[in-house]
Image 1 (tube, rainbow, N blue to C red):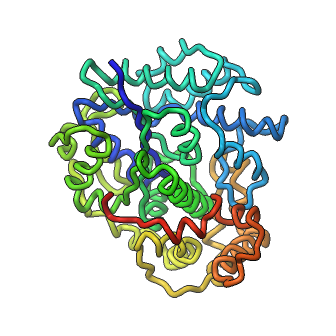
Image 2 (image 1 turned 30 degrees about the vertical axis):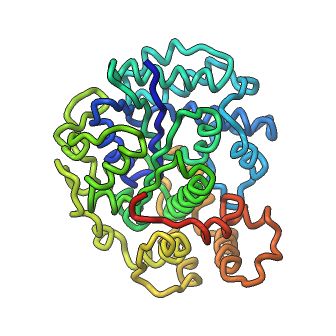
Length: 393
């Protein structure tokens, strides 16, 4: 039986798990939780090694803010998944795909080890077949997975698979960062600037994909989901060409990666319903300096998404708040790669450049490459002016 593909993505702590469990509760939809990150990183390495043969394969996905790998990033955005394995080898792709899958979706592992093929398209097709084999059945019409951090791969996926759709969720950056600070299951103590820049990246790719893939790209705010879950999930059902099923709003119907009853993974307390209870919890978690910094550095995107700020603009003060940048780097991954997010003259200058460019009435004279480096995606200013973010599609 043929089925359509679905990817659910967004930055961590933005509600990707909640929306994926709600969609997975539909009898005709099968969604795997958090597999395959290693596959996407290997695809990134494949593209980047065309430009940098000695590229560090363990490097985390970039936030692309004044990226050292700008032209490789552009090439990835223009590419498709229909790419031969040339710079990477099959064994390593399989090993890394399994490594990043084992913790969250262990039932997939026995099948992953049997992957075979000479192109990333072949491998991805098999990855989706594995999800269907493990989580689907004869009635399944939509097969997919939830995976944060992979927003930059949406365009290559849509370009390759006409039967693929994307659901993309975003959340108030203050709530995302507060949730990340309090979450007990997060492996890394991400620096504040890391979270801010990756949230801005997530927004930028949402803009880009809404503009170029509107018919296959569903964008929603977390706040709309928890306020009126039934309306949102009915709308998502229409988007997926599936009849709405009441199980989608019945949290008791939600299942985890092993088919057991799922409990909402809120950072604050366990819940068994979709609730607005924690919507403004960030006000208790973040200190005044953190709120100031987040609002100053995310004000462009927050304004577009109708997230009201609590502070007055004072970006120069924000960029000299040492405690907002100097969180301890407490794991080996962050110690090695997270230092660029700490307080430095370079970081201050880059953020001020972004701020001044946005407010410069003569920015039409600025080189397009420079603009893209500062705002992540091509045509950012055209897109942010012309894209309308409605509460529901």
